[in-house]
Length: 272
Length: 261
Image (cartoon, rainbow over the protein chains, first blue to last red):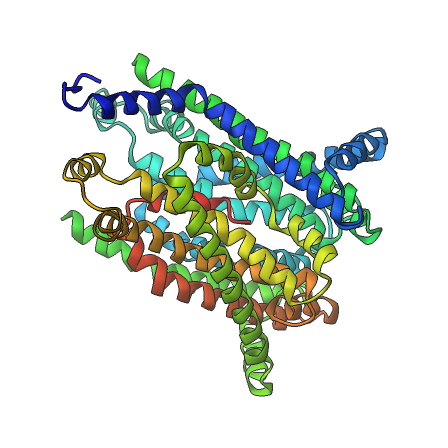
């Protein structure tokens, strides 16, 4: 606040106050927002039958009930198993094709129409198409997640390859470093470093896609299946409980990990 | 030199399209019947849909629903965004809620909406509005953040009236942000409508797509997917692309797009 003059004292104090508010009480307001939301939810639930809107308490009870049954743990496990398989395929193909396309702009142009279509296609439509192509099973759900997550990682990799430090590359070229070593030791670390936030973003996306695919395809296990069953039985409190599980999972992946990685990346960047 | 190489590479885009078509045709001939339709079959069913009028009927229903939902969601997002953008407490109060809404799979809310509204137009309109809302909200907030604070300070020094401030400072500055938010949300709206119809409706494009599964009509499904892509591409070309070029918050729209499930 070095620019505070005599005449603007009031405005200046206000600005400092706003800054303090931003720092110290943002969490307070966020928590207040959530509390108000839960209170509203509770009030609304009083008006309607639990079959339509279960109260927050009923949802928590349903959540505890759900996880006292081993079956639910299996559902969570099978969804996350699929997510991990999909993420592994997604990351490897995304980085590999992205690097090839990053080095060869003409290959990038050849892949581009496929990428454009994958972006434009509604995810549900792709899920239905995958049923025709792969039948109903794990292959199908994984294929959907890979197809829809691919443009994200591929695009990020292409950009990352193009923005590798030119000075470093020039130096390596002067020292006549082998191409393989160049890719392995100069490009790959830079690319992985650059697309890390995108990998995390893609994990959150994959969790959501997987649950969508499970619901639309109608698999016989997984979180999506558990929700379908809850809907058929009109067990709305179970749907709410599963939603809580999912919000927690997606927020943990996207918010928590993304925050940690960004902090780590920033620390790394300021050190160098 | 560089430019010419760039232009040369553009030639490979149509080659990519051709290659994909050839690959598709080969796969369609090789794979078991019904897994992947030939291109001709897809266009035949598209033409037959157009001739029977089915195409226009369902497309009209879906477009109507996504427009209604979009209008509701965009209006709500605009007003809450405009209020929360100028009030830190409100902004932080909404933050966790909008954040979870952005991170939420629409399909799950569709299941809830089916319990609340029953099968029909209500589900699709509700879902479309609900998921249009956070996109418009976030873009209005981002637009307000980008307002030039020095300009605002000057305006306050010269004691410019509130109305004048909104008319000649806020609105022009916000216009690009709001427009790109709207444009981007329009594409999302259609996709969400399709998704809602697929599970919770008995007409509209999403519903007919779901039906092709039970009729084992792969060509019909691909024809409808083609229609969807055309609609999304039209929105993209007419609305998103021209506005995005001028908008500084495009990075944000890209980010939201990546979460668009």
